[in-house]
Image (cartoon, rainbow, N blue to C red; front, side):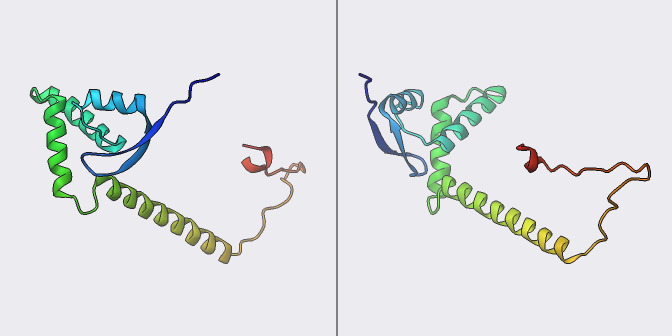
Length: 134
């Protein structure tokens, strides 16, 4: 019989984002960040800043956590995770909108179909990636 790993919902101490994680993972994150739980986005920001600052000066993980927490407090209204998620949604909307416009404009332009055979008399087959399962 397999052991079932229990999970819990934890809230990021920087931005407030809630995540459901296993107990083992929660303990690992807290151990790395001095007893604090940080979501994936905030933890990556802190790791990046701590690693980047090692090249300039000796800023450890604890100082990077404190600096990031101060930054998140400053932006508490719609924390960094929410802002990134909203930015990604806007990017997807623009991309989808651009593809929709491109499809409309290409379908409105009627072009003459390509000749069915080349000058040598051989037929050319047009194979789309979708037709061969790619």
